[in-house]
Amino acid sequence: MRTRALIKRICQQMLRDKRTLALLVVGPLLILTLMYFLFNSGENASSKLGVVNIDKSTIQLIEKSDIVVKEYINATNRAITNDKLDGLLELKNGKLYLTLTNNDPSRSKELQMKLNQLLTAKFQQNKNMGMPNPIKPDIETKYIYGSSETTFFDIFSSILVGYFVFFFVFLISGIGLLRERTSGTLERLMSTPIKRREVITGYLIGYGIFAVIQTLIVVVYAINILKITVVGSICIVILINLLLAFVALSLGILLSTFAASEFQMIQFIPLIVIPQVFFAGIFPVESMANWLQVIARFMPIYYGADALKSVMYKGMGLSDIWVDILALAVFAAIFVTLNVFALKKYRKL
Amino acid sequence: MNPIVNVASVTKSYNKNIVLNDVNLIIEKGQIYGLIGPSGAGKTTLVKIIVGMENADKGSINVLGKKMPDLEVLQDIGYMSQSDALYSELTGEENLKFFASLFKLNKIYQKERIEYAARLVNLTDELKKKVSAYSGGMKRRLSLGIALIQNPSVLILDEPTVGIDPELRFSIWNELRRLKEKEGKTIIVTTHVMDEAIKCDVLAMVRNGLVLTSGTPKDLMESYSVSNLEDVFLKAGGKQL
Image 1: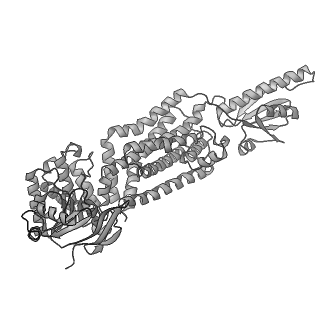
Image 2: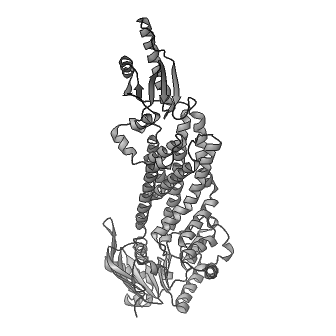
Image 3: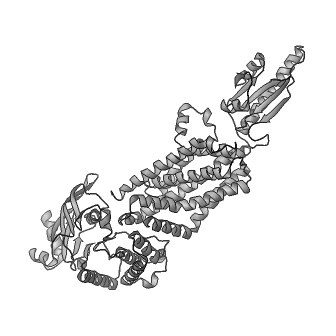
């Protein structure tokens, strides 16, 4: 009942503060829309290519142009995804076939372009040397994910949806509780018989209601208005975003403990929120230095973005992303527990 | 009879700064107990320790026979902090209702208490207004109303009458007196205004974390053979130096 009173009060406060409410919803929509118009290309690192039935000299040529080559007797799409290849080049009945993973469309395009150049050069060379029936460089290209039409925004957007849900929930819940700390109302609250966990539960649910509404609006807007591709289930996309929002909520409340003013709360943004974007998969984590990859594992967004990308772009289901879901749940659980302890600052009991 | 509040050799320091130094207080049922002293003397810290919002480094605090901090005892303590801890987006009534819910008052009793508290602090006509539109004095009054909302047997008021006009101050003190006499409530008040101190049953003079002297205002004036409290305070302080 105390928790309910707290939830009711937070809702009343939020509904009176129209501007904050608007920021919570309009903010992510605005930035997503802007990004939608801005993005169309990206950049790259060294690619990994599988080959079947390709002669040694061609392989050497490919390796020279900074592409890692792995040979197979024969390979399925499964082998391509399992071995994290960017593509597979096959020679069947004298014709070349290229299967691109298209995990990252800009990467795929570059790989495709490089191979085209190499094979054309090789064809010319063989022809000049008077070799009979040299292999024609007409490559037939297939895609595992997406198509040749896939743009960078299609992948990027799935990550961004999660990121902005995270960012805005973090900001508003953090500052919401901070205001309560600086105005002395939290202290006043703690002089009543309310339990610490009741306070945290009330806060999580109170702000959680608005986080859920925000998440639903952002996801629906991204899918229906911005036409962001969702291959997998929309329900799972919403679930992942809700989890991210919950992590942001508990983290925001926790960090507000360490801020003495709104200004200090804003200082956490470049420290905590911005670095996460680098590990969200916009820059491929696999090609980072080892120690950076370790850091990535401590970023909630890393898991959220991976899950979103898997579901929205690759059409994977819950069974493929349960590790990500679990990781997010663990983050939330840790932050919530720390919150209950952090309130000891106001009352030891 | 057991004292309502028993503070025994309490010491508290922040970063090696001693705020309270071996403080002892015994407050009996039905007393208006005044803590008087300049700002920074340690009054607020002492009050917070009694409520259980701060932990004492040494010593013990018993309120209503229970060792503090204790959540159940908080149900019976009405606390008014020095700053007006109010939700400015909400109306006065919503603020009162929120705190009433925290003390788990049932609907009917809640309504009754809100009416009572609003009438006492003269805010009945302003209840529907948002707190952000309140004046400083009105906020102070609302804070006092909130402290009384659950009908607690112990009231702990930290500078309750700052920014309140003399007329209302007079009526608040009358009400405190009535609460003490008719309802047997125990009231702890901090103040640095001498003309309020004289209305207390027992006074403790606090300075630099020490209780310099305590007793009824009359006894204090007699024992220092002076005619007003201000002189008692100066003399007691002088003895310290």
